[in-house]
Image (cartoon, rainbow, N blue to C red; front, side):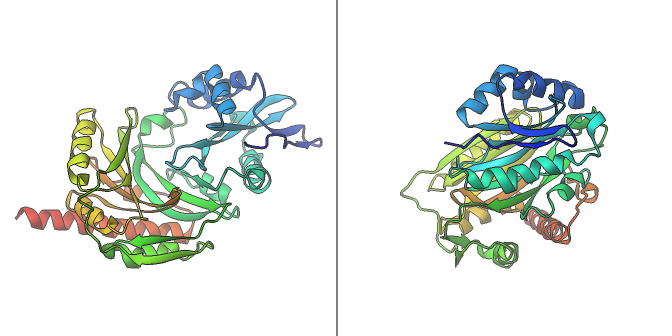
Length: 347
């Protein structure tokens, strides 16, 4: 159960930061319409009653900032990973006439430094700052998040029509911060061992790193689920357990998603499985390339692999930190390697 009695007031500016209160759904919905019109892809934020229910269930936490009692900004924590104790920080926005006041930074500092540390059921927080501009990446700098992965061509330009901030599909950076460490063993696919050891270096919680050199277990079935985002043309396929039917199941899900018009495929593999290397090799043969590791994704770590049926947006990606640019270089190199291998295989 989350502790919900933490507020912060600043009498000098008339600002107040607090968790969701009864009646806040209307103010949050008005804020989304002011900034995005009707184009925001998560339709929950256009339904005040649904926002209230999600907060009551603990699936979403809406943290608002008020000026003279009126909601002028909001940031959310919500469940979007397979592990319910991993929350995403996102769906944040500030009213247009209140920008350049540092409200986003104040909200994030409150959430990450004051509120989340008091929540025993929140083990990890991650974010997906978009890469059509560096502003959100700068806002989270100094909050002890670690850049771990990049989602290439994640969002359609239509999601940013109101603000006219994107001309093509938009990438997102995946950043993570641990609040309840859990030592565990992970298995590194041999093809990515060097890259993953580099990516894991900044994490301060212990992990035992082993080599993923076993075949897919033929005796056990796979545990796979798929979520489709029709507006974004994205399929996310979570592989909690890869079994002997992994290739067959994945092929069927890809066919279903393609029929629905999906352009971007993301597969989350479980790095707790010593057969994850075999899964990666199959995915690379099918055109998937590296996205990066996902700490505590299944409670154990995950690995993002991604495939695009649209042109990659590498040259349009705006990144703030040197580490993020190094991650992009690794992914771009792997995309080149995978597609060169496919071309050679067709000859």
